[in-house]
Length: 137
Image (cartoon, rainbow, N blue to C red; front, side, top):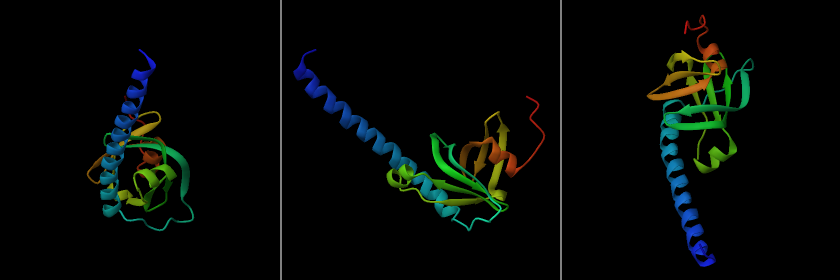
């Protein structure tokens, strides 16, 4: 492959990748905004547990180290990191514990259903939401 070919191929890959990333963040923005509308932010209590740069999955989107999670007696508060706030225009939402349905627990994470969305949340959040005896499996 000669240099002239590379001068054409590299910009094409950059443009295609940019379009794909834009499409992913646009799609995520729609799902995130529906969660924001459904669960508006609430005031965090002084006794809340707060952990930064946590990993969650919302549907097909794996958001590794992309949110700060705060759990108090009433809600799970989800705060997006700076890049999610900028690229997906994501805002804060607070999910009441009554709306969190914990599924199977694994070593580091648990499945959950929040609203109409399937989530994968850190295990510590699942344990705070509904402390139960360890799964038999």
